Image (cartoon, rainbow, N blue to C red; front, side, top):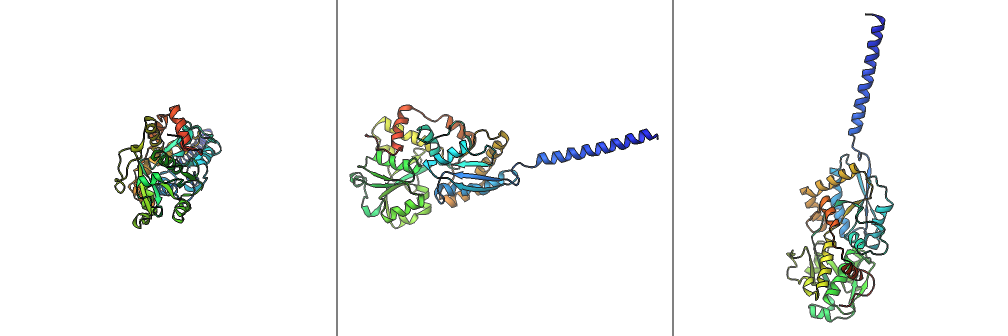
Length: 355
């Protein structure tokens, strides 16, 4: 063999080896999940320890399991404005890199549709990952010591002190709806509590009444019923017609509506509430990372273990909205200007509208 051919073979082998090394190194790198070794932060638009926090705690271990690379997931609380502060942060401040997720209550939807002050996000531009809950039941409770054991007594009581979280919070809007549709006399609203603070305020007599999800009452304070510490007056069924096994005897709030407008208000509220507790991403999050997170959320919601954990932490069964269902739901929300204007007065801080 000539010296020239020998040098060519050596060069070819070296070139081939380097090429294969480069190819396999690149291939291995491409297969390394983006989320491996990363940390995802879930920004919660609520205080710690409330029902919404427990819903997130139920999701986290399963979401981590189904995201390729199994990233660390941590929570950060950003209460304020019924979810406005947290959603504004997700929309306009958080980097759209797939490492920051928002978890906000139904106020995220209601605040935007109602055009509440301080809303700096576009509902139609957020990216939706779904919600672990949609169907639910709300109760209106008063402290037993007041002796309001009938609707007639409740409606005849003047200046009932009704506690709630921040103005615009889901429970605040519920409380306002109950008092308005039931026709209570000059109710006084006292916002500013966290969920656990509100429980304590009711038991200590700082407030007389509150709205409450049925599931959370049975999970966190079943002794209120066992020891007859509260009176339950009415219920909101979402979706309408779905009876709660423990509170099926209570009248549904819409049965007290006196006009078509009031029934439309109830329909709008149900539409808002069916959004559940949306998980959202900032606009501009890369499509491939969005799809990874959406699929991980789908797998979480389908996992039987998630159902058990959710029930254990919240007292309720999950009623998930998948990402694509939530996106469709947001697009089709009722947005009638007249009803929006009326709902805005109910959800705001001013006097309730005259019926």
